Length: 196
Image 1 (cartoon, one colour):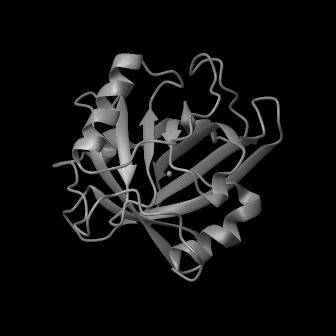
Image 2 (image 1 turned 120 degrees about the vertical axis):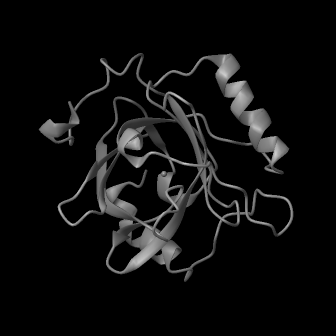
């Protein structure tokens, strides 16, 4: 899910599988199942990062959020925001685009922040009301728990972790970034007026 601007080149290299990848957090070689019937219209909008697997391009990021909206060409515009080293740190913004890997497979997307290089973005699970989502990729190296609100109820988070463990994910060592008290309290810097 979110990439800081200063490391977009590293993310592109990652997407091209041309650099060292983080450890595989998924037991076995079978890709995880994805959520059925994801409604991308409802998935659009702002998501706050509740937890993530450790990886270089988000190192030191807090207050992380991602905003999605349709582009004129039918792809999805992605705006990732990160405050470096704390909520009072410097804002870093990366803009990219996402697209479906296969028509009709709405839970499997790929995202690019640099040129022609794309990385997998699989929606493994999403709330019925689209209040939270779990995102990873086929090898389980990247993992995000996202929420519409920057604070997630502990019971909801525990259920997401249990879900991931049931799929064979190692959830030890996940990073829980500092987040804003509420969506209303989160700064709008870097977001378009369409973000509402």
